[in-house]
Figure 1 (cartoon, helix red, strand yellow):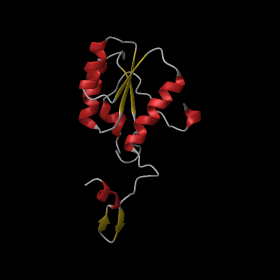
Figure 2 (cartoon, rainbow, N blue to C red):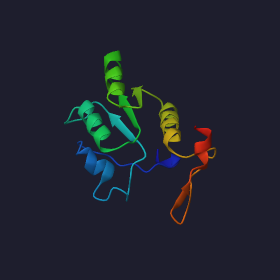
Figure 3 (cartoon, rainbow, N blue to C red):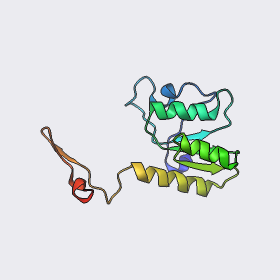
Figure 4 (cartoon, one colour):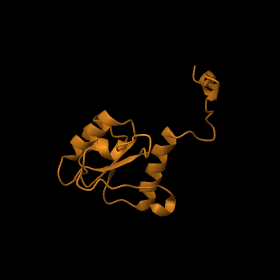
Length: 129
């Protein structure tokens, strides 16, 4: 995926989500998306998902060999934003990642707030009311 632009970090043996998602300096290297396999060695992937939801409001895409409906529903109910069953193609994975990132990243059609000397004007708010 490096050829497509994202910078990735591996959690290895599932260290605490706080240290991976936030690190010692949370604003220094925030993650844009969490790609989580439920079949991690060590802690249960569902527990990692719960911890991630307590620690960060980042989109979560589950990738798993568990294709049962109960597993999918359980992950989505715990806060996953999408669920992809293995095996899958790289193109589908990238499309799902891009779709999740579009929901949280300002795009060309979204107006960013204007800030000047403590005053903030949200130009996009008029269309949301």
